[in-house]
Length: 158
Image 1 (spheres, rainbow, N blue to C red):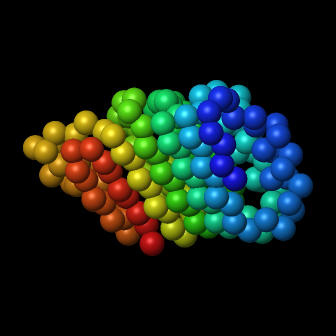
Image 2 (tube, rainbow, N blue to C red):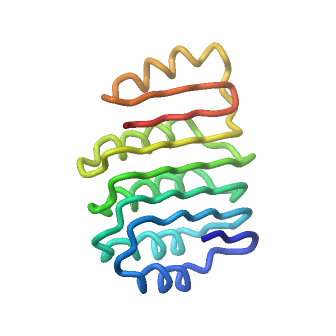
Image 3 (cartoon, rainbow, N blue to C red):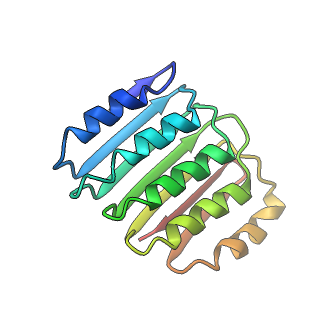
């Protein structure tokens, strides 16, 4: 499912997803959408009743979201206990903080039912001199692989 431009129509997507009770995998790509808190919550809560839902691939491309929206998505996905594998990709020009990414990783790493995740954030501003500090910061999480560049962060648990 892909949506480009405008605003996410959460109720429509929620009805679509909810109508597929045996849904196991979903790939959702949003391009240049403005996401509102209410819409994010509505969309993420539609996964709870889907007992077979195990894999979610979620891409946000130039959606102009910030730290609060990223953390809301991480929280919402962590509240879906049947979810085992998450791939979350954010590519945008607006600023995301390392603290937000750290909290997102912490939320996923502490979700006992989650077996693997793959997180990618692009278009950040990280000074090369800060990369060793970031590697040490993220090394506190067990079974986590990290890769940093001045413009991106990739973190996975497998």
